[in-house]
Image (cartoon, rainbow, N blue to C red):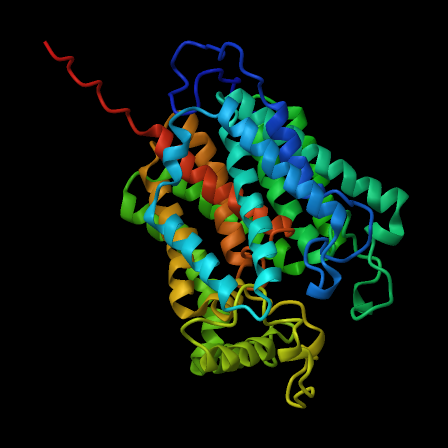
Length: 450
């Protein structure tokens, strides 16, 4: 069967594609959104090596260029959000889960070893969340959203190829450092090949979305070049879970029975969570898995998770504060436990987003993170109509959400303000929130008093 791309739709995103085409008078269009997306992915120092530009040790004070840059982004987003975002957009985030999450972040600053450093980190984390909300709020039509996502990700992809071709010392892993086994693997403008792989996986899904919504050749090129990058980045995990996320998101879009849609969306996430961190928490699962796959450790991650869970058990209520565990004297000052396959003293995170959220915020904080990043987005998805422009966007966002939620079991990126994988998940979570909110019929105007 030949492929026929869907024509571009110029109706408001919340409306159905059968409505008359109309542009928003005086609206700036998609470019501000596209540039925001590109800047967050690329950062302000795209060819400056393999360190997280905003995650420097407290003593170093962080990277001043990125601090100024992201602070400026916050101010610019404030202006753009107030000028171009629909009036109803702000109400989308007046959810109790988001308010509680803000409270958890604030409390984690006071429980941190260095409250001033944690406060700075939290501010930048909030700026990135605001930037994601702003980028998705400005486009008023499906056509503008397609253009914004396509151009923003295409710019970031171009920077990655420039890094690989013209700056290979920065864009390709060398044989030195702590991970010589990654020599020759592509990372582009990102700090690690795993980060690059996850971002490119999201770009593949955006390419498919763009291809189906009026830009067949542009979307096809984005999808192909992103796929090539994933292959040369060498992440077997991404190559494994990306097709799964695309498949389950597609199946969910075909189903009209809400409980079955819920089951389809959650199944891959729940299964992977169970066989990763769940298997370490409940050892019989890991024992059964190792009977099927002898020596299974998820590249040594099970040791890290066991280590992290032991410390979480010592401070289960409040945790250790925002970004106040890995890389601190609490861990780096230990003698290397002989039973661990990884030297925990040099680890920057626990390679599991849920574990690191627990270590930072405590178990009650993890529950609120779950409500904000899992429960609310899935409920939002179920509330979005299955036809119209919002449904088309929802199919993209739920695919990105499944992909990122699965990846969260093997990598740590929650609330890491300079981590582009976290930005990808924010696009999904906030995108679903906006689609659900803007798809609701506005209340009827009150009857005027006689």
